[in-house]
Image (cartoon, rainbow, N blue to C red; front, side):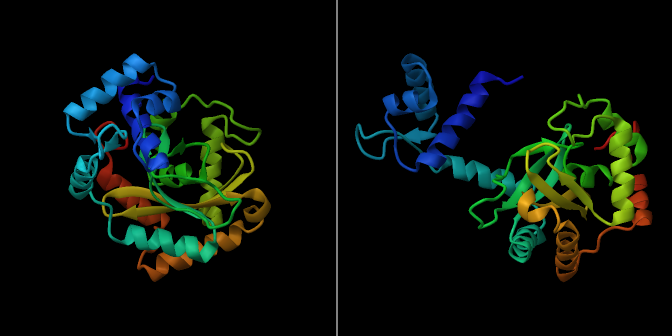
Length: 265
């Protein structure tokens, strides 16, 4: 369930990120489909709080640098490891496909860093995008880092909606996928959540974080290349001094992190 006021703030920021120039009240109202009176009150509140201003009189509103200041303060308090940015760019260059770093949030994998492919036909992904943890290679590469009891706690919250003919629809199916991925040496997906999208992912435990790194692109270009993509991923991890965790290392790490109820923390 979305909270409308919070959603409106995010929609407005996305609107300006795409527009990249000031907008009048009428333009904001029309662009976002908001009533004029609500737009007036909403924009007025953000102006009073110092988050919007008029760069030129009566030429429209635009976000102030205050947004950037807040974002930088938040990011500095919980920074991603320095290696992440270089790793994502390296893998994207080596594979030619969109590459992202995922983390667990609820029953989704959320992207913390993204480097998009330069192909015209590609997987369009942005920081903050989420994919179902059970119906994506990025998600299952995160699940694989948790002990069975913790995974069961996550499974109990999943609705197992069907997104396509290949969507895993049960706990047993997901667990079988995890087992096969362990034997194969990497996680893979094919149109489980997004049609005509193939992905390859590896666990990426950095410090006390359980992350994953995924490479994804159209099935026409990426489906048969999944073994090659996995090899390129592993080579990139090695270049950056990161070794994929062994089964023994994963279990030892899981035992140290396991909470009192076994739920992923």
